[in-house]
Image (cartoon, rainbow, N blue to C red; front, side):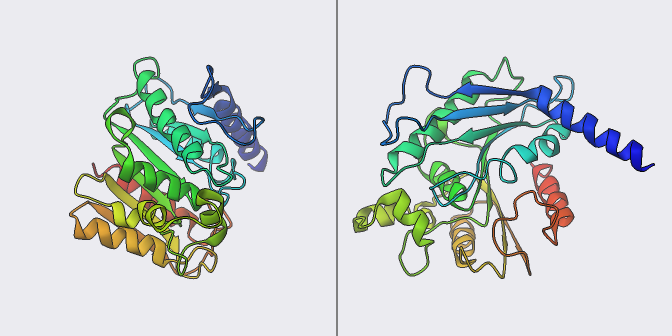
Length: 270
């Protein structure tokens, strides 16, 4: 029995790896240059079997305090979970801002547009493209959800233990400094405190975090939920009693199975 289970895991991994393709996000060069010319933006595309495809797709933004990316447990490890539900997963390897917020923002906008440009080929409904992010990637996802327009605007958003506010008393300081620089102007702090940018046009949201997160204060996600509620944006807030920060798809997270079931249920609700 144990051997059969191991063979199943190997087969599952092979299925996921065969489904992946890596795309240069900016084949003709980015619109916003990075201070690090070796930092390239990419899309890691995982498509479900065409016969199982629901038309839904998710652009995923891993976390890492805007200094690095947790590409596995907050990225590619999710591919089988979503593909098994007939959902395409596109993991965005976005470039680090080094104080220039336009760099990762432009990558995320182009990622959304790229998915919709390839919608027919990838069996995706352009009206069912969401965005998902973790920690600083959650901030990036919420920034796209509240700022992007037209073919870059997501139809729904999924935020895990997100950095939301840029206000110094509550924000995750490393993420804020990497995103906006060491001495950002008050206007930028307000503009990219994404709870302040929620409107009635903001897409529906799933927000998950741990009550004992001492790295990114739970108030970040709670404030975002509160503003969604205040603006009549459908939102679901899930606060787990323990788990800390950065659990992503890790099975060591005490509420891993509950979280997966709750997210699946939410996705099936609309």
